[in-house]
Length: 131
Image 1 (cartoon, rainbow, N blue to C red):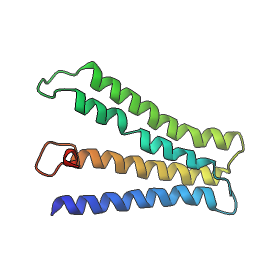
Image 2 (image 1 turned 120 degrees about the vertical axis):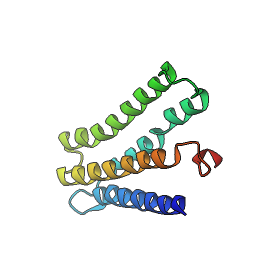
Image 3 (image 1 turned 90 degrees about the vertical axis):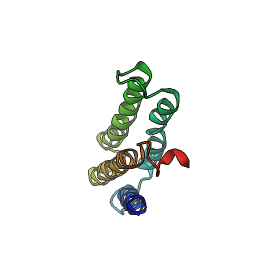
Image 4 (image 1 turned 180 degrees about the horizontal axis):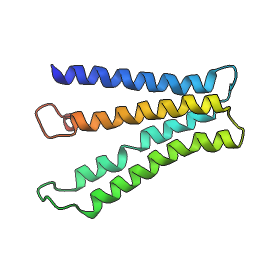
């Protein structure tokens, strides 16, 4: 039952984050849809870590290069997702209010992705690897 509650709260967090992203795009002040390119970053961010979890054997306690490379790539994707709206706002492609809404959505969505891996990332009975 705890897995269902966690899944519902994570889906609620994702919906709130996407709402902030859509508000940043569709408010009459901004009315530009350039921030929707961040959806690519949301999809790409968990991929390196998922690949490294499949490739790496977790029996040793020492860190390995594959896992650290995956964390490095994920960090680069997340920082790029935070930097793109700021670059758009500095270039006056979007308004600064829209930039703030998009950055708020970034915090919520990346927090949701992190929460997903914290809740379902362990190798227990209810795991995301079963899906």
